[in-house]
Image (cartoon, rainbow, N blue to C red; front, side, top):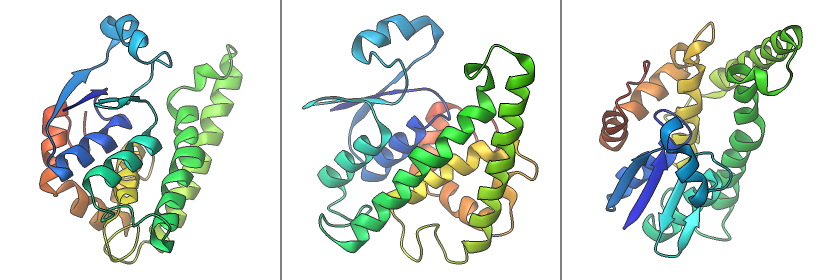
Length: 206
């Protein structure tokens, strides 16, 4: 049995969707301001997700995705170890985790970068500019069924969550010409629908 520590709509949604996709039993525990101190005893970083497993606690999305895909996906969503498909899927996931996700930190949490309001405004403006450029480039390239290509991979769940965050941009990422049908396809998956319902969120809302 797993326990997923989550915050609605955050990157923990990626893990939540995969748990639903694999159909494995798990428990959900929401992390909020009231439970933050208790949560830090489990995960000193204080951020979600954390996945309590029979082997211990994992705290980074990339590691959790790999762990779950290897244990339950039989290589289906990540690719077999040592294959080109595996390397390319991990490349996509790593790009989202290390390049795109940090841009959203600048968009949503500009006050983490400075106490000065004018600096915060500049941080957010630059983050917005780079995110729009990124999504426009991905929109132009997304001409097949999935962001990964013709076959669904774990990276598509990550990109779906990233695109959902982009609903606050103008134009909203989930409504861009090619991203829109991909996003609709992903959010219509029963596993994704169940995860969003349990988190009390919708594809384009809270």
